[in-house]
Image 1 (cartoon, rainbow, N blue to C red):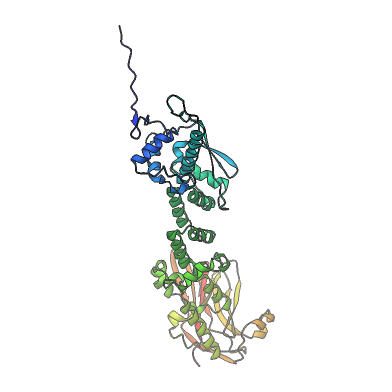
Image 2 (cartoon, rainbow, N blue to C red):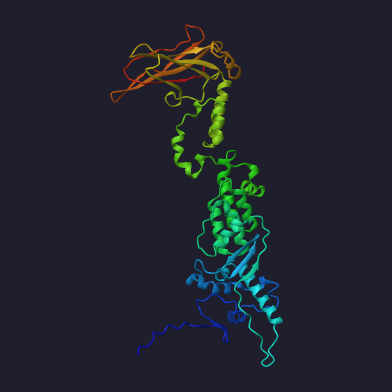
Length: 465
């Protein structure tokens, strides 16, 4: 006779010092007496007479650790398993599992408080047996109903749903738009892991559009690392982004005051003066910023906050002194490295190319002429402001009344022919330019080449007279 195969016996776990026990793989059954004995073994004051009135007195951390252990190890709650707790909140009924409930201290306290109140009510209403004097045991409940009231306007249903989803999943996808609501929900649910994750995400997602909301959230929840991160971000970005992406009305006043008073705040934090721009400094020192003579162009360069303010102030001051001295460029001494340059590109399609240059009240026309397929000439001449095609422009620009202007200049032309560069140039010529026909024209650079296009350059300085 074959012996039937014996089924493995389930090990029972003793809870407390009496016969209250359960299977380890089963979730907490709601037996308050077993829970009470277990809490005594853990030195948890669950039998406080006023615990149901003041749930904050419950030391929930040890209970939470014990009852949520099976969630991590056994993953008891599977998809489709019947829920045993219903949470009423934000006008919704959220169906949850008791095992996951204890990952939130707030929900755990609500659950235990409701359970204690139910047990006490049942005990008060139960009539003792005449013979033994014992009372009936509290019958099991299929679903426990708990209620949570939230008055925080930051919490909406979508964010709260994500917070509850975190009870079941370790990494819930949270968008930047939902961060504030999920942070507030995590604070209410007392879910420290989710709360810290939101804080970390906020620190990584700081931008002009999120700075104010994230800073105020850090102040509200007294999260120092978040407020410090906001202060540091504003220190580094206030000057570069002011007026383009950051506006003062969007920055909390106390945050702005902290940043402006901070000794580490870069008062003149242009790109080249920051750590990231130090490596580019030698390159931009070679730029001829004094060639920028338009006030509008200088203002635009100042607005982008790329160059140190001292550089632009020096350029502006030199322009002012040059104007004050009738055009004498006393600050420019080396022609090869400091001469002001203007240019043109001459293609085969053009026969004549000219451009008017206005500089410290003097007007010059630079001109390139194509005589035939291989012959070109380049020259410059002084022009009266009254001879300009658009005299109305003179109402808004500087005009010099000096009869003559001493100019040192050089004309060059470059073109690429058969894999090599051809270069044509005049010497450095110093000449007085007047407004009459005899003395208004420069030396003419004449070249013969089959190359195209031709790059012409006019470099000149107004020497001190």
